[in-house]
Amino acid sequence: MNRSVGIIGAGTMGAGIAQVAAVAGHRVLIADAMPGAADRAVAGIRDRVKAQVAKGRLSVDPDELDLTAADSADALSGCGIVIEAIVEDLAAKRALFAELETVVDADAILASNTSSLSPTALAAGLTHPGRLVGLHFFNPVPAMKLVEVISGLATDPKVADAAAELAAAWGKTVVRSTATPGFIVNRIARPYYAEAWRIHEERATVPEAIDAVLTGAGGFRMGPFALMDLIGHDVNEAVTRSVWSAFGHDPRFAPSLAQRALVEAGWFGRKSGRGVYPGDGAPAPSPAPPAPAPRAVTEHPAFDAAGGPVPSPLRPLLDRAAGVAAPPGLRDDTGAGLPGGLVELPSGAFLAICEGTAATALSAAFGRSVIVADRVLDPAAATAIAIAASDGCPEQSLAEATGLLQAAGLDVYVIEDTPGLIVTRTVAMLGNLAFDALACGVASEPDIDAAMRLGVNYPLGPLAWARQWGAGTVLRVLDSLENWYRDGHYRASPLLRRAALSHRITAAPAANSAPASQATPAPRGTPATDAR
Image (cartoon, rainbow, N blue to C red; front, side, top):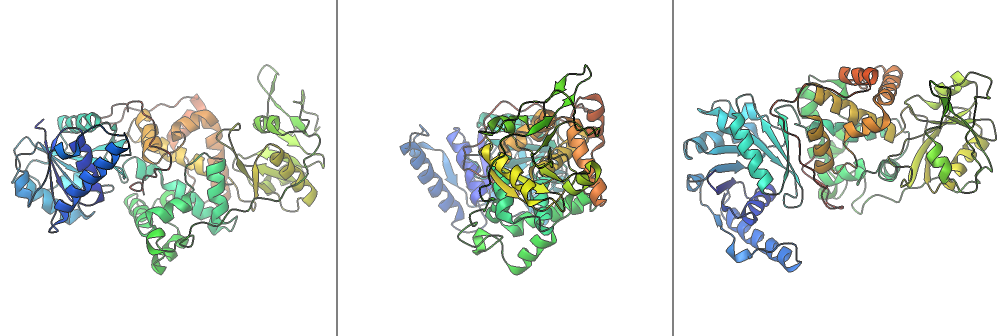
C-alpha cells in the first residue's frame, strides 16, 4: 500500500489517528473543513509526542514526523488510504466519500472511523463501493489498543485485509466485524448500562452502590453510572436508541426512561456539570454497617453423579471468612430434599448464590427465609458484594449473612429483593448478547472477547465469563429473569441454549473473521470514551 495516509477531520479522533500513523513512520496529511483546525491539530500532535518522548514512552523525533496540514480534500489525491473522522452523520459522510472517489487513485482505500453507521450504507452510491471499509478506532486513539475493521456488503475482502494489516502495523489489536448495528463493542456492551438503569428504576438501590458492586465484585474498571456521566448521557442514550431501533425495537436493547429524562433536562454528565452524579462526582457509597459474624455455619453441598460432594459456589467466600467455622457437609441433612449449594445460618435461614431467582421466590419454595448473594468475578480478590433478603426475613438472619460476608473482607451492600441482583444479571446479559453476535456471524469468539476486553476494558470477555460460570448457569439466570419479568428483555440466545445442552460454545465462523492477536488491555484509568 502507498505509505501516504490522509485524514479528514482534525478533531480528537482524527488527530489521534494521525498521531498513530505519523509515529509509525507514515507520511500523513490531515484536512478539516474548519479553517485553521488542521494546523492546530498538527501542532497539538507534535506537542503530545514531545511530552511522550520526555517521559520515555516514545523514541521518535517529534520534529521529524512527516505530518502536514492540508488545505482541502484535493490535497489527499496521492494517499493510499484516506480515513474520515468527521461528524457522525450519514449524509455528510456519503457526500465526502463521493467527493473523495473523484480525487484519489483507483486503488486507494476509503475508510470510515464511524462508531455506529453501516459501511454498507456509507458505500451506497459510490462507483466503486468495494474500496470502502469501516476502521473504528477507540478514544484516546494512541492509548487504546483496539480497532474494529467492519466489512459492508460490498467491501472487497482484500480491502478489509489491507486495512487490518495497516492497523496491526500501527500496534493495534484488530477484530473483524460485519456491518451490524453497534458492530461488536457498542452492540454487546448495551446491558452494562441497561441493567444498571433497570435496577435503579426498580429502586433496588442507589447508583453509587451499583457502581461499587460492579467494580468491587464484578471487576469492572468503572461503574456504569460513572462511565455514562463520562461518556455523556446524550451520546450514550442516542447510541442505545439507535441500536434498539435498528433491531426492530427488540426489548433486550430498550432504552431507559430515566436516562431519557436526564437528556431532556440537559444533565449530560461531566461536560454539563451534572448527570446521575453532581459535578464533583459520585458520593461515597454506603455499605452495611458492621455486623457480628456467626461462629459457625453449615454448608449443604450438592452431589455429583458418583455421589461425591460438590462444594457450594459460596465455598471460596466461606474460606475467607475469618473466625467462622464452615466445614463442608457430607450429606444433605435438611430433610427437605433441598438443592445443594445452600449455606445454613445459625438462625435457620439459608444463604444462596444468585441464579436469577428472587429471594422471596426461593423462600416460598424452601419454606425458610433466604438471603441471596450476588456472584463475584474473583472470590480471592473481590472487595464488595450485594445481597438481598426474602420478604419477612428476620433482621437477625440478615445480620448473620452480612457479618459472615464482612468476615470475608467484603463491603456488603444490602439491596431490595430484585432477581439477578447486580453482577449476576449484568454478566448474564452481556454473555447473552455475545452468544447472539456469535450465532449471527458478527465476529469470531476470540474477536468478541478481545473486543470487549480491549474496547471497554472488561476484566474478562463475555464468552470466557460464560465458560467460567457454565453456559447452563447463564441460561438458568436468564430463564429465571424472563419468567419473572415476562417482557422479552431476558430472552435467551438459541446458541446459548445449545451450549447449555452440549457444554460447548460453537458457531459458524464469522464472515471475514481472523482471530485477534494476544494483547493486554489499555492502561488502568484509560476509559474508552468512544465505546458508548
